[in-house]
Image (cartoon, rainbow, N blue to C red):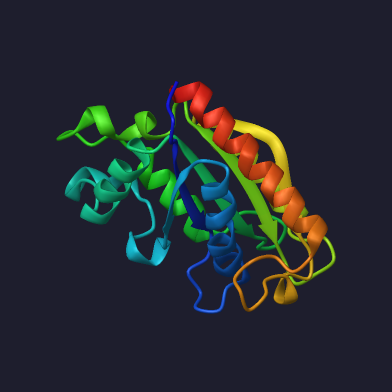
Length: 196
């Protein structure tokens, strides 16, 4: 059984002051405490054009997507923190997931569906409103499950996220901290069992 699962953490927004980015950063310590090696990535570091099959046929995969595919392939799990755009997933996250699902002719082993299949996943929602991005969680769960990931039952919606993360980088609310600790432990345990 794998001792230290590698978990990739990403936010579905690249906006400078995005609440999801603050929450994603707050997830690193609980994952480490649960026994994982957590890697926080910024989707802004992997800029890709809007997915288009003709563009893919003409130019292949963008180099940044090939790099991200390798990062995901080398991981054991994924934690995605999602803002809610009109009740659903952000265009940035959907585009990134779609590009990464495409096979790379130069490296079929570490591309396409292989970057997702058999790995654990968890989803968090964040919103300045009272629902905490609850509606987006179901959409992201469906997409990740379709891609072959084992999405754990535990999920978390952080309401009033504009004041959820303290100056120390952790969640202010004790109940939310406990829920995040439990989610992190479940994700790490599932990743360890799936990839061990």
